[in-house]
Image (cartoon, rainbow, N blue to C red; front, side, top):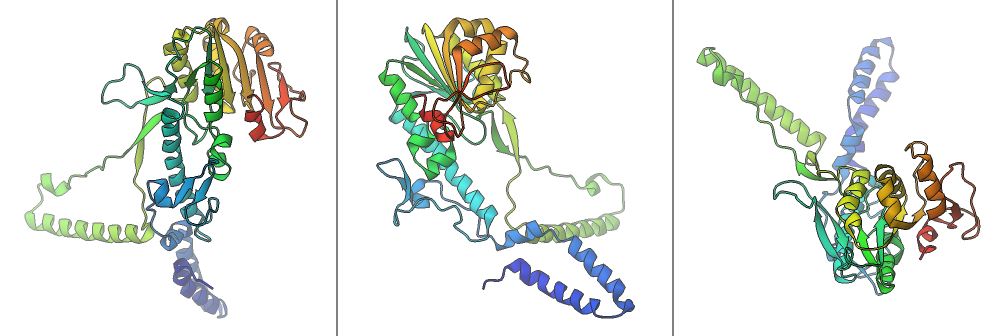
Length: 380
């Protein structure tokens, strides 16, 4: 049986408390003092001392994983699927490892969009300066020039980025289940131009600048001897504080700050921006949207802000488990009527595929997708 470092640290205190509690009333003061000590111990921080370093590979090969010919993520040596609980009883460390792998998956999907789907990566804002934060979308070569058909894909909320439906499905199932690639390839085979939105890329993270506090002794009129004593005490205090911080949080992560991307600071802003600068400028007579989960809400917001333009260009919208709400978003009667005629929402349900599902919202029809995965595959 393994014993954690935190248990070894706390064990003497627990033993002391047990011994004191067996004593008489004279020991109450000691019990109170020990309880106070325990209350000031941050167990979550203490548990971090049992973790391996938060230092993860930056490539799939470094993780010893690769996608096989079926698009499944498998261990290079064992052929086994991804294992989340790599370190037993270390959930935080395992989660950090999973997130590190997820970032690699995101870059891998970006590469597939460019190499396998022949999409172009387009930087936004279109007039961004060299120094300001930027995002990007992906477009087919003919996205703006195709005179007939344009397909626009919008994913849901969370950690997913352009080209993904669900990171969990990419890692645990396969690329076809979790990415938009099957949609993109089929759309292009059938003569559509394609635009892939990136609504969750709303900011960049940079490390917070360290604030240097100038010593008060620099500008003080105090005698030199007194300043020296104060500086010595200050240095000793800082030394003790640094030692305690290193003990308390040995894997202290960098403090980050978010710099939002102009006119793309939310999924809703992003959808409107891409509409104004790309979709509205396209030559296609018929524009089709596929919007999953929060992507459906972003589309409804786009309709509210650009109703006449959307109605003039968009032919049909396929929603999948959309979380939009026409009441909360204050969509007007004309928008609700248009949605009833031009939208359909495939939702998770126990009913057979495409069975009508009752809705309390007066917008678009809802039909069964059986379960979340089918919600996407059913509209292909």
